[in-house]
Length: 395
Ligand code: PLP
Image (cartoon, rainbow, N blue to C red; front, side):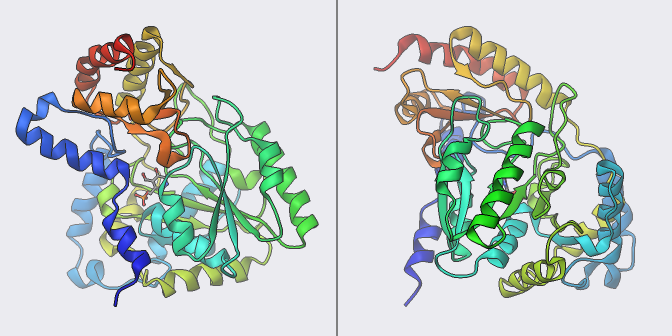
């Protein structure tokens, strides 16, 4: 016998992955240049040179030193480098005790959720539209996903719906800013209000509601926009970070959890999340990558291409009559489908080998997502296809 739940997870790829795989197959038939793949968030710029240099340097170190197990929480050098970076960036003190190195944000999220999931009734709230894997993560951690619908197309937080959703089983709220799929960045005022509500509600229900702040796009913001640091607005926040997007290292699986000193029951939270990581077999993140990060924690993201792509795509699509929120961060555009039915729109687009992801899995079936971490020339060649789709309307 096998677990039916796991069969379902293994068998049913997400729409995004399905579309990406379709694009690869289709490229063999019609040629790579005739497939316009805007499906997944695979960075299109190479890692910064400093990362390559660090790799080369790490590889000259004694083999036993770079291939051996590190402590489960990560090696001291990587934790110290992350802590020093956060101290500089956020102007508040961090030390290695605040940092647990993980295999990307996915592992950090799983360890946090499992650490905060006290029983099968534990609820975790997400704001639609949301990264679809949250459902898999929350349910695999043993909890229940609750979705708060958006208030409007600015995709900030619908506070009224949030207050109505919180109940005695609420354990956590997942916050993702800059956001996948909308590119929205929560304002300080929004985070302030979120903090106030969670403090009030924690008192009312008699236990702490945690924020799990999923931040793989923290450095990917444009026009000098600032990304507020969520723990500055709510003490009981655990930060899940990743180098997948900012340093273009998604296949290398490296990131971290950060538990700030302001967290209530700091030691317990660290033990619970470390225990959860242990229970899932995440004993230590890839050692070579830890040594790379120890040398690259301060390296900035290369945003130039994404900033250019964002402008071309946003201006091109809105000039044609598409509606979407101007994305301040990440590398996605979340566009209202012309007839309000993204599934139908994405099917029509697919017939032109234009691969965009319907919003259904993100909890927002009126919109579709366009990943602009792609080659700029592909965007330029794809714009006439977007125009054909909006001009022709529903067939
Ligand atoms: N969270 C969000 C919002 C994402 O978009 C992604 C990846 O696309 C992840 C988490 C997972 O990131 P990682 O590659 O670090 O596991």
